Length: 66
Image (tube, rainbow, N blue to C red):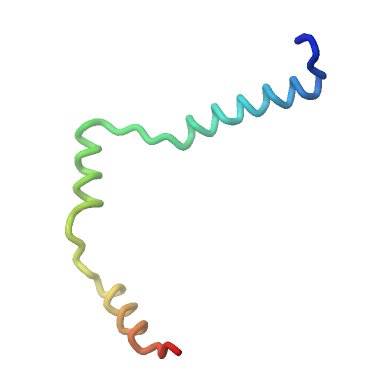
């Protein structure tokens, strides 16, 4: 046991470190170069509006703003 550290503080600190490590593993996305290029093209490419977008735009233009 570490000198000057209460048991609960030590356990809490260890749990927090492990939690952070697990969150980093679960939230990190790893892509191959090919997949990254495809992802990059998809998010940076031109977007063609679909019928749902057209409908949403029409409904927004009908809303009167004060």
